[in-house]
Every structure is written in C-alpha cells, then in structure tokens.
Length: 124
Image (cartoon, rainbow, N blue to C red; front, side, top):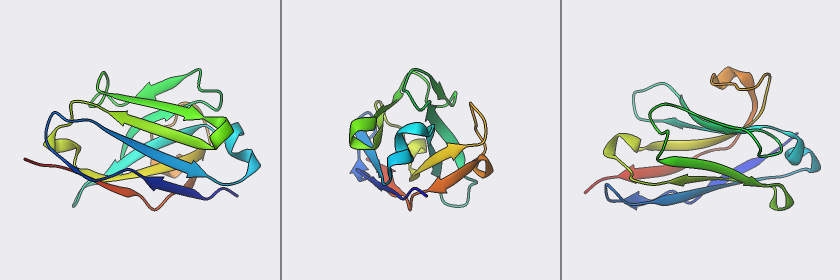
C-alpha cells in the first residue's frame, strides 16, 4: 500500500514555470513506476508523463513533450514534474499515480494508487 501526496500547484501566468512534487509513503515506493495525470473541469483524466522505477525511462504525452520533465528521487520517496512554458490549456488538477500494470501505461485504470491532486491554474 502506498499513499501519495502532491504539492506545488498554484496560479501562474502563461509562459512561466512550475514544479510539482509527489511524496509517497512506504518502502515499496522505489520499486514502482510512477506517473502524472491531469484533469480539467468537464474533461476526462489525461495522461501527462511516466517514469520507470529506476528513473532510467520516461514517457510523455505529445501535448507536453519538450515542455514538461518528470523525474524522481527514490531516497526521498518523491517524484517531480517540472513544467515550463505553461499554457492556459495546462490548467487542471494534477494527480500523481503509482504502480501501473504494464510499462508504459497511459490509462488511469492501469494504476493502483493515486494522490488527491494539486491545482494548477495558468491565467493572465
């Protein structure tokens, strides 16, 4: 069992950067692949990025490729999402997910553990 807590979301202007953090509990955290998803009002949950348990492999949605970077620090039980060149379309609740059933996994039902999310708002 893993509990996930996200932080770092806030209001920013278009073009600015933001880094989200997700801290997990439990010794098994370092053995799980992790991912970030997002959900905007009235829209389905959308895959953003994923990272393997070792951090050696990453995978991104086309909409964020080249702007967002996922990373992890297993010593801190943490995974991060660096978001650059933010757009208004990036506005959403960002959720951390763990332990997919396969790699890479882009569907939310493929992940076993979820955080509550952190709100990112991009607006001028």
